[in-house]
Amino acid sequence: MKGIVVYDTSYGNTKKIAETIAETLKEPGIEVDLFDVKDVKKLSAKDYSFLVLGSPTRFGTMSFAIRGFLGKVKSEEWMNKPFTAFDTENPENLEKKEYSAAEKIAAKLKDKKMNQLLPVLKALVFDQKGPLKEGEIERTKDYARELAIKLKEKKSE
Ligand SMILES: Cc1cc2nc3c(=O)[nH]c(=O)nc-3n(C[C@H](O)[C@H](O)[C@H](O)COP(=O)(O)O)c2cc1C
Image (cartoon, rainbow, N blue to C red; front, side, top):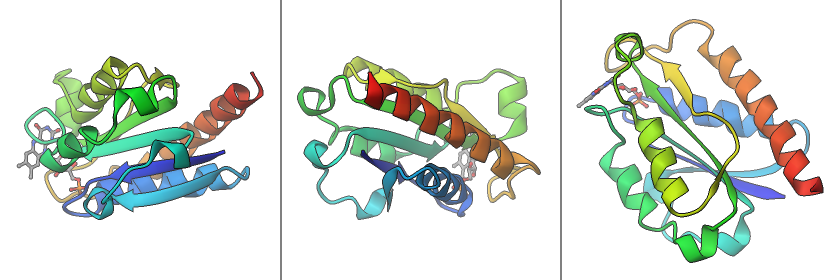
């Protein structure tokens, strides 16, 4: 089982979350490729059995680069494959229950008939540049451990 984790980042916070997810998935032996979205030239569904996609929240939604990447996720190739989505956003955004990138990504991938394995992860950052709120890396590790369990369950179905 090999998956791909793709993220966008301007200041490095979303990258840290993506790296944490990728490293944590590798612990129980799941293979993962990790890509900055700018480095994904061609996306081949036959190389991957799952997708983890994350974006910084910009004006309540995903970044332009992540929107562009979604165009490469062809429904006929990725249909039924598992995914999960994450974002970084400000604590006030969450408190006010404003939209963020992750829900929008999840909705798009569900439209492509992909299979959402977990509720989205919303990692909190202060202001535009961060840092991440204390405890968010640990929370991300917990999230990725749960994801690993779900992926292994899927594989044995
Ligand atoms: C142009 C711009 C718009 C933003 N809009 C929002 C927003 O609507 N909601 C929010 O919670 N954070 C917003 N932010 C803060 C970003 O979420 C934050 O910069 C990002 O999570 C940092 O991640 P990065 O270090 O990976 O770039 C915005 C930041 C920028 C630069």
